[in-house]
Length: 633
Figure 1 (cartoon, rainbow, N blue to C red):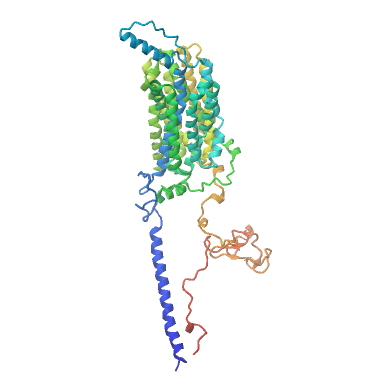
Figure 2 (figure 1 turned 60 degrees about the vertical axis):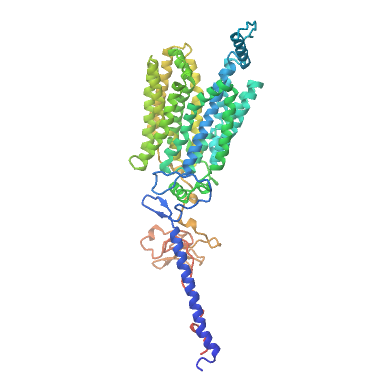
């Protein structure tokens, strides 16, 4: 028999058939796997907008998924960053409401007539109404807390003693640990301390000061921490919009905090405001803790489209590991000084109007503005509307390419400051109540556009260090808030209209100086010292891994194992001259004569793409005996 025996014949016929079947199954499996992989690929259009056909409408793994649609991208379901913006805005409302509690309650706490005395008055009126003549005598109505004006002033200002201390440390801390946790913890602790204030007041005003200082210490980190949040969550072309949504809560808090505290104090006693805002703050802190996350990649609620959109838009690693803070660069950068000066100017007027507005109307126009809640809250209500509108407009101009980021920041900041300065002049010069109120409202409202200038500018020039820069600039701004009332008190000792005119002229001049400095030195471009280290920049080879030996080869690379860099065997040559390539560099004199592949590294030469490759067989090695030399013919 030609094949020797029947067993050899069976092997030579059946084994090739089995091998062919196995090859077919393997090929079909690879084809199906490739088809599935292609369906899951993320596709990028001309605007770097990302979407995934596979993820569209897919369940995200959580019962709670907050998704809103916006026009920032065609198919991106961008809900989570707006949830963060909304929740942080509510947090600022509660924070500023807490600050308003003491200012409203202290009026009732130190005025003549206590709760017990009022009950006696009501009892006597009831007896007289029933026709019973009574000789009931009501004792003199004394204040519940006999605090002097100096004590009241110290209690009011003690909050800022702690607030100014933690600005820079809070910014530094927010750059090292999750900023969202710092933000939520700060407001939660401040709310808890608010619950202790009524009891502290019953003990001694010194204890009240101590609690207020602690509140200032913990709330001093809120603004820097908010910038730390947007460092990870805000795409560059949405920074103005998202940041201003957050910050408008500050001004809404000033609008809501005063009247709500007044209503609670009048209806339920001066303690009620502290308890209500304290409980609200704790509830908010719990919600924030479960629905906010340090960065998109850690959120279980975010869609894959939004996560890719945010991370690719930011374009660099946001890790704080081994991040060195360039302190010297901060204090030698003129764009940083431009932000600091702008924050000082804005805070000067902000605290002037917050603290001195009732005194101005009372001394100049004999009008008690505190009795008209709507009129007193109108300026900050307008600002709470203008701030997010300005953010939307600023990002629209940047996104459409109408104006550069630098031009947008300068126009919004200088335009807002300029309008505010002009209207402040009108407030000081006029002697008409209505005109003064209109000018004051327009001045405060105009300043809302400046928030889309200097207050977001930290994220433009140094997103990695935005929280630190915010702490630095806001600390200087808080210093302005502490100095402004002192100068105002010194300039208005006579309580005349002419003295108040000087106060508002000074405020206007401060703004014009801020316009000049910011207009010259501000920038919207990332500064060179703010660039991420090379190892933090995203590169295609970041997705590849070494073979475990520490060597990263790429396609077409070969290793010079000769160990002779001075011209030994195997060294790269130029026109037959060994050793012309030293340390992986091509000498200038040999540049035109080099005949080998360019070696960018000390030990390797490359003649292909800079990507790691591994050798992989494209066809299963044949196992058929009749195709090898092991044939028994």
